[in-house]
Image: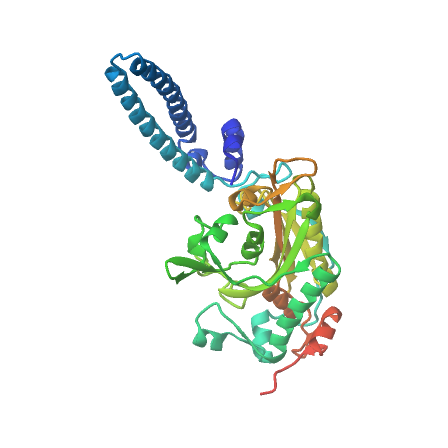
Length: 430
């Protein structure tokens, strides 16, 4: 969420940034300026009347002390009190309306973000590696997984429904190996602390990271007593909210955390997209990286976070490219986002495998996460960042498609063999 004073003092800038995101300022801001002016007028009028009431109280006391009639002034004071209460109620209502508008305003894109309406306007930053060459027709992962007997979408549909998967034998072991490899890399070499958070969170947590109220349709809600719990769409939600309503000491920053969790998404509005394979699932696993940083360091930390995610792909020998998202393709909470897109030869396309974002103070303001700068008494909001390090299922897909062999087997990258206890995926023995 943006600061009220910032929006008030920079309304033309906010309007321009909304247009850059492909949004209509009037629809997002509604009548922000008018409501803000009405609120301030109500507060000013109430304060003026309070001052008048105080003067009247002093005069009433003097009249009573001298034995004079104060009835008229007392009646006037009662009317003032009623007007003050009415103005206070009006100011509160205006404040509620302002907060509702503020909640709907997306973050301000960083000046380095390319302006564009959609993913077509994203800009490639760099590439790493080269795509594999085959002397046979490359297959997509769903065909390879089915032929090897390690990926079972039919039984998953029977057990649960569409957009779920069952992994068997070495397929399941590959998923587990990837998670362990990623966590070990981030904790042993990149300086992250591992955390295992809850997989369900309350509504305050969803609000803190920006999923609620706007994106409720994309989530799985679990009624629980008189309150709702939510299955997490990403570990970003519980991990970021670990410090909700807390003040961090500056000396601790940056705080770097990593977590491996399942993720649950309803995929509302995605019907007909990626219906084959396991690219778009209702449940998938992901290793997440979350950072809490000082404002002046957050963009340096974004570059580090992105490189930490890239190193996973590099150690696995997977060809990828880094894209900086255009204003119209970023999430509402992000100020700047890099997407890592891995090459999938079985489908002949690049596919997002990690999204690394700097939210600046947008989430921290919603979740009230602050820090105390050295030598200062006043606290400030931290900057929060997060990125996939990586989406485990999509990494599984990338390995299966990139390292497929003519005999139908799949070679295991060297970095994973100590976790797998095998050097290739072969047909499952029934």
